Length: 254
Image 1: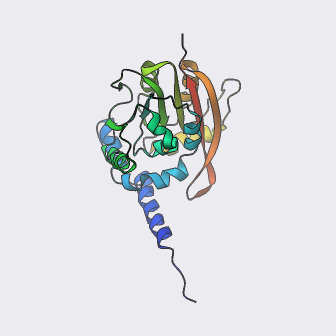
Image 2: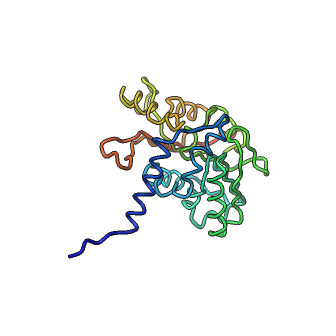
Image 3: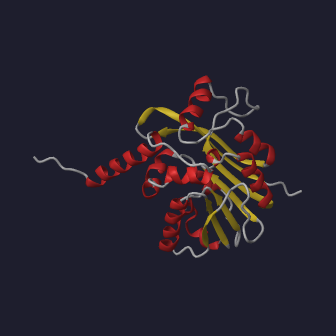
């Protein structure tokens, strides 16, 4: 009997190798944050979504939980290829405007192609900075960060900007890698020495910086509506699980 070869799996494997090369081997270059982002993502934009779907856990759950205000304005900071928007399904057409804000132009090109293929006339891929971007409407009903906060150098400013542009009662959703503080607040998960030490160094090689302050700062600025702290699998690394959180909050109305 002749052996059978699954061409799709073979192609997927080589696609994964390309991604892993950019994540683990290729040096990230650039003087500005935008240049470093493009250096990291430029060679893997076309293969980005399939691999990240197995690495970045909790995105579907977060987007499912978030409200979809009729004729609302949604800003997805670090939205990249726009793949996150598929979690909205047909509800995307009930929104007035959706902004995919990113600094990696190669990812935004993929996002533009996706919008054209899906017929998303109300979605606008936008090259912009999460620390200063303001939608044309002046305010947003929902703001999201999906595995992007850890890649923003001045993440304090990014969260503050999200707070600034959100309408009172507006929602923020964040899902990302993180590590806990050594002594977290009551009710929050505590990670051991290995997680608090190894993961920040592991991810830092790709300019991804899991922080023990992300979650506490979000909880301080917004009213917590939903919180999950969990761990997810890493492709090709069967014994390790990366810590991640899902945070959905609301800007106080007062």
